[in-house]
Image 1 (spheres, rainbow, N blue to C red):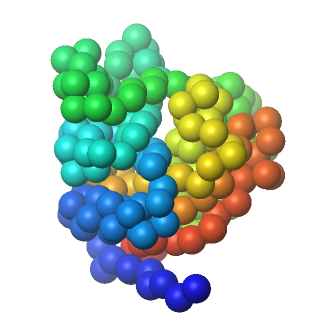
Image 2: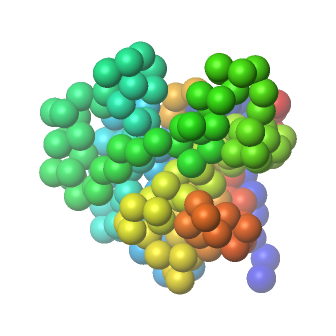
Length: 188
């Protein structure tokens, strides 16, 4: 099989539309029905639900309290809009964060989850995010480790990365396989 990888000159939201176009095309070529997309405030989730209509889109948001105690970054009305556009919305603790991040902040030491996250970031922050949201979606039962999916990620806000992978649950992380890189930034 021969395919191409798109490399972007910039990271972040300026690539979102092109990422979604590349995802739509590759999903059609491979017969993939499910796409996992992160969103911080909801704009990317809405764009994905619209651009990927006809696919099963899972939008993953930060856990409540991620940015500040008790605060959910995606307003209820925005989450409802994503659902109305056909997306399933998951709000969950980061697979590579959560309690481990609390240990780092409290005791100034790194935990296994955060070491894995930092290692994955060597391929790009978006690659780390794509893998992390796929773990979260699998743990919630929204995607199956038995089927290939496309997982997207970004650097900061928006999308700049997409990969084809066979997901896994967090407790079976090493069963996850990255099968293809569709696109990612070339810049660090």
